[in-house]
Amino acid sequence: MVISRVDRRNQALIRLSGLCGIVGSVLTIIMVFAATVLSPWFRWDTNALSELGVGEVSLLFNSAVMIGGVLSFFFAFGVREYMIGGKLVNAGTLAIMLSSVSLALVGIFTIQDPISHGIVSLGYFILSPVGFILIGLRAEENKFKKLSIVTGIAALVSILVLPVIILTMPFKAGFAVPEMIEAFILAIWMVFTGTKLLKYKH
Image (cartoon, one colour):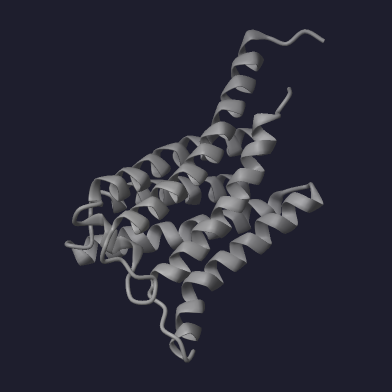
């Protein structure tokens, strides 16, 4: 079977986007976690991750979210090509792209600008899970369909419902806890999907 130059280029771009998804999700979590460790005042029982965007570890934290946002944006392009279009896929990948832009903007609009910061933070936390669910509804592979829908729902629950549940618990937990839980959930989908894209063959 002869593969055209265009097909080879498309295959290479899909594989590269898969690598972007894996590196973007894992590296961002590592860098953010490192910022929590290096910050002498940060406490999981009282703080939000966004508070790391100002102060002595601000460069590390803000770089993490900007790098993650840029890599996730290119990852979304590969997902769209891999899924071969469709309204739900286009809507889902658009949601992930907008979420990626929002994540990158978190590193620009820090918590010192609470209104803008709140908008971009919410954009990241809500749009990615919605994108996963939309893509899952269109996916033909049963395992990928289930993973997309389950991780999307779990991520929304972790950021919208878990903070309320935490308030009823006898122990204290800062907003950083549900934020990091959602980040891990989103990373599971991105690493799994990124691996599929990385192995893509026309």
